Image (cartoon, rainbow, N blue to C red):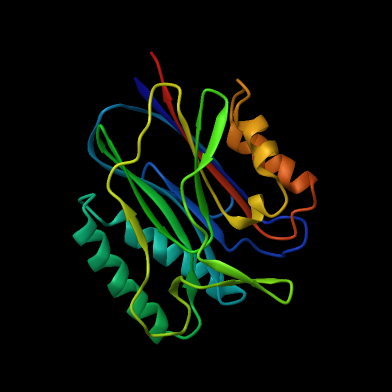
Amino acid sequence: MKLRLGGCTHQGTVRNENQDAFLTGGRLIQLGEAEELADWPVDNVRWVAVADGMGGHDEGRLASRMVLEAVASIQEAEQEDVQRTLSSLHREMVSRGNLGSTLTAIALKGTRVSLVHVGDSRLYRHVEGYLTLLTHDDAEESQGRTLLTACIGGGVLEPLRWTWMDTVGFESGCRFLLCTDGLTAVLSAERIEEIIGQNVPSPEGRLVEAAVGAGAPDNVTALVVEFVKE
């Protein structure tokens, strides 16, 4: 089996800059697209992740970059290593003011897929025509706005709340979608299921294109990991 990793990020139709970013194959992308094929199983841990930065202007871009650089530095896909790295980063970002970011990441190692999640970016799994949400948004609605109840940084020094799933199930033909809330705010689960289920090149690009076409007032990022039969 082969892994296909493809990501696309766009600033949307309103924002002047992109505070989203994604990580794939060791490459950190803050605008544009990236794609690669890799062998499966994976010998060394490979991180695939999206982050949605906050803090305004350059701070949001810096926040998402800091989070993904920290994730890329984790050498073992074990809960203790992730906890140590993210907790240290959380304290550093709080000390620097309002820097904050979501994180949704999967670690690929051997034949195992593990999940790391904090905030309202999401992980979906698509198998045999069905889309399943695997994460829970750390967010609540207040006066028409979405407020995060957990993030990395964010200006509040309290213990970081995050989710770890040691093993995420998958099979040949399965697609994982990691995305920021700029995508899910304008595309329904049914529309996402329809697009990602199509047998077309670069489904992540199709998803971002659809979101931008739907108005996309926020930055939009989609990252697809596909297990492909040789």
